[in-house]
Image (cartoon, rainbow, N blue to C red; front, top):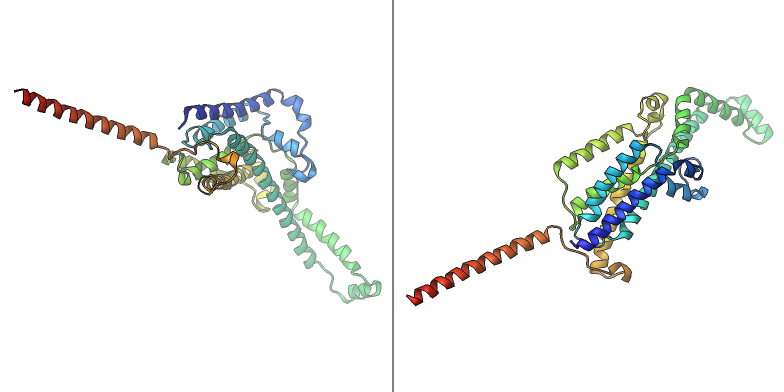
Length: 320
C-alpha cells in the first residue's frame, strides 16, 4: 500500500474525529440548530439537523466510545487497505455521511412501518365495530351516506387507544426522541468491514474473535430493537437501556449495502472505464501482495547466494 495515501486516509479519519470533538465542545451553542421534527424527514426541511446530528453527542462517554470504534473500523477500512481509492478522502467522508444519514433514513422507514401497523389495528377494530343493524342501515339510506360509521369509527379508535395506551405512548415517544451521535456511522462502518472482509480483494479478512464480537453485538441490538408494535409496549420501553438499537441495526444493514456498491463500482471503473476523476490513481493490489513480493525477493537473494558459492567453489577447484 502507498504510505502517502495511507497517511492522507489517517488525516481524513482524524479530521472526522476532531469534528465530533469540536461539536461536542460547543454542544450547548449548537443545540438550537438540532431541530428534528418527528424523527428524521428530509422533506420537512431538516436536512441541516440530520447532518448535525451525526456529529452531535450529549455525553462524554458516548462520544469516547463512538470515537474509539470509529477509529478502529475506519483504520481497517480506509488505512489498512492496498487500494488508493479506499484511502481517498472523498470515500472516507462520503462513507461517514452516507452511513449516518442512511441509518436515520432507515429509522424513518421503521417509523412508517409502525404507523402502518397502528392504522391496520385501527382498521380491524373499525370493521369489527361497524353497525350492521337495520336501524343503522335505514338511517344511512335516508341520509345518503354512511353516517353511522362516523360514530362507530370514533368509538373503535377510542377503545383501541385505551386498550393499547402503552403502545400509543411508546409509539409517540419512539418518534419524538432525539437520535444523535455517530453510532449509526459506527455500525455502518462495521457492516462495511464485514463485507470487505469477505468480498474485497484489498482488505484483510477478519479473525474469529472480531466476527464473534459483531455477531454478539448485533444479536443484542436485534433483541432490544422495537421492530413491531408489541415491542413498543411500555413494559419493553421501561426495561430498555435508553439506546436506540434500531438505528444500530439499520446503520449496519446500510453499511453493508454501501460497501457492496463501492466494491462493485471500483471494479466497474477499473475494468470497464468510467468517470475520469474516479479512475485517477492506481487501484492497488490485493492486500498481502507486498508480503509475497518480499518472500519472492528473499528467495531470489538466497538463490543468488547459492549460485555465488558454487561459482567460488568451482574457481577454487580450478586453481588447485
